[in-house]
Amino acid sequence: MRRILILAVLSSLYSYAGNMDGYMQKLYNAAKSSDSNFKGFSAKRGEKIFFSKHMGKRGKIISCASCHTDNIKNMGENIFTGKKIKPLSPKANAKRLTNVKNVKKWLRRNFKDVYKREGTPLEKGDVLTFIANQ
Image (cartoon, rainbow, N blue to C red):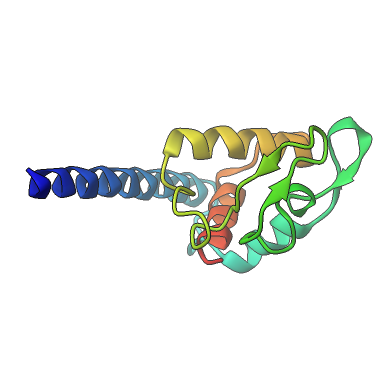
């Protein structure tokens, strides 16, 4: 019985990872279709996106780091609501980047808060690559 439970847990984790791989592949395909010279996502570009400041939601100059901190292995805090945010880094928070539905939801919301628009597939892939490497 214990062996079956362990296999079920591992299967569930693999399923999430597989879903993220599939999502990253979709972003890759979309970025490639927009730019035939696209070679792959870049953590360096993602870092630039993450830390760049913009006139965001409510007319305040913000970046992703405004809520997630300069070190995404640390707890953050939503600057508008005061809500605590668990570390964004998968190395500090094993649940990060495991659920595609949540990843899509938060990318959409956070891009709209900071950039006042939806992120492009290239931007999303670069930011996710940056986060995954932290």
